[in-house]
Every structure is written in structure tokens, then in C-alpha cells.
Image (cartoon, rainbow, N blue to C red):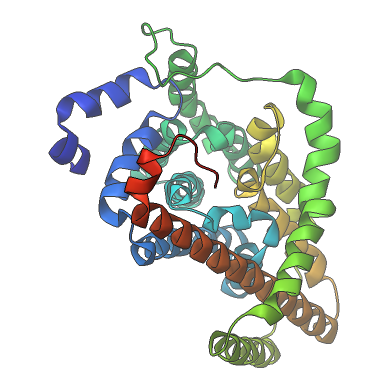
Length: 363
């Protein structure tokens, strides 16, 4: 409605009908920019709210999968703090991606509830959410495979309900390949790169979870953490100490039963099925791990659950503490960069007339 109000129905219709890839994403740029504009606080607030909604939805999914609020909370917390997907907090654009991924996770959650409870409206809502997510951002394209696997595992009579998801899949493929008419200026090529599959699978994905990219996110974040200015540094240290103390005390009060090893193949299925679209493109980036990291977090929880309680507590506290400090250090480096960008922008505005009169400008 914001796009219609500000730019008129013709622009909205053009975006939704000519952009063959991610038409809803192209549409959503306008209301997000209209809300936040150049206000950095509103931009950060939108990122915070969309990230919170995503993590809350991931928690609900894990809660109904595992039937354990405690393990679901721990998984969701680890998922939230994973350094490999910090790209999702860089710019206002990623608010759009957070919302799209939330819709996919909601589709997964609704299908899990349908399989467990057998209510048809949950299946229809899951199907609708998947269709919206697909035309928003194609990251969860192969989600129906995962739904079929889960239903076949839990309730085989409802497994074939996943076949309904072929309808939006085929519609998306038809639109992506521009079977419905000539594509407009926003069209994109199909983009499938089979030749990149070995590189993505054996080099880029391991780097994002275990290698250079993960190490860079952790080590650079820890390197930047001591540079945080006062009083923010004092506040962050205090909050971290309180959070980790609360985590240790909570962990001591509860009794966590070990998770079954049967979750390992399902966690791997989540990881590879939801990573598959990125594996078939030119490269895997941090934002492409946002869905597959659910499987990674579940796998980590299963392995952690097989350790003794004291070892679980010590190891999880160390991991959470490192991830907290690394994330805060990386966030502070963005604060510094934003200050530089603002200073450059203000200088350009102040010297606008002089710049316009100049033959050459060196920045």
C-alpha cells in the first residue's frame, strides 16, 4: 500500500509483473525505504525487529520439532549468535531478506504442526507461506523435499501432502524462465551453475562453517571488541557477564535429556536441502547460510547433548561468550564505517557547489 500511495499503481504493477526473479523483494524495497529513509536509527530498528522475528520463528520450529523448549532455546540462541551469517545485519536491504526467510521458516513450522495435528488449514497456510517466500527470495526453493522427508518420518499418511508444494514450485520456475511473457528490465537469467557445485560444496561451504570465513568473523570481531568506545564498552561487558551468568544458572537448574541420534540425519537434510539453491549458483555467501544454519545448530545441539552436564555447561558458555564478543566487535566496526560514510556525505554536501564547478574531483 505504501508503494501504491507514494509511487502510484503503475510502478507497483511494473515491479510485480516484469521482475522474473524476486518480484516481492523488489516491491518491498519501497515501503522499507519509505519507512526508514536516511534515518540510521529506524534502519537499525527495522533490522533488529526483522532479526528478532526470524529467531523467534526458528525457536518455535525447533520447539515443535524437538518437543523440548529447553533444547529449542539453546539451539535458537546458538543460531542467533553464529558469526557466519552476520551479513544479515549490514544494511537495510537485509531486513527484506530476514522477512523472506522468516516466511520460509513459518511455512516449515506450519507444516510440522499439520503433520502433528492433522488440521487442513495449517497445510494451506504452510503452502501460502512457501509460495510467498518463493517469489520473495528463492533461497528455500527445495523446502518441499524436506517437508516430504519429515512427514514420511513422522506420519506417512500425510507425506504426500507435500506434493501440493509442487504447484508454486512450477509457477516459480515458469516465471523465472519467463514463460508468461517478455521480461522487463528487472529480469535475471536462470543462474544455475553446475560447474560451481564442487567449489561451493567442498570449498566455500566448509569455509563459512569451519574455515577461513568463520575464523575471520570470530577473530576480527574479537580483535575489534577492545576498541569499542566508553561507555558502550562498559555496557557491553556488563551485559555479557550478566547474560553468561544467567545462562550458567539456568543450565544448572534444568535437566536436559540427551537428544536422539535420529536427529543427526534430519539435521544434515535441513543443512543440505536448504543450502542447495546457493550451491547451484556462482558462489555461497554469508547470507546464503541463514536457512541451512538451522540444521547446523540442530546438529551441534545433538552432539552437545551426548556430553556430561558439566561439560555441556562449560563448553556452551565458552562458545556463547566468544560469539557474543565477536558479534559485538564486528558490529562496532560497522559503527566506525558508518561514521566515515556520514562524514564523507556531509563534506560532499558542504562543498557541492565547488565540486560542480570543478573539472576534476579526487575523493
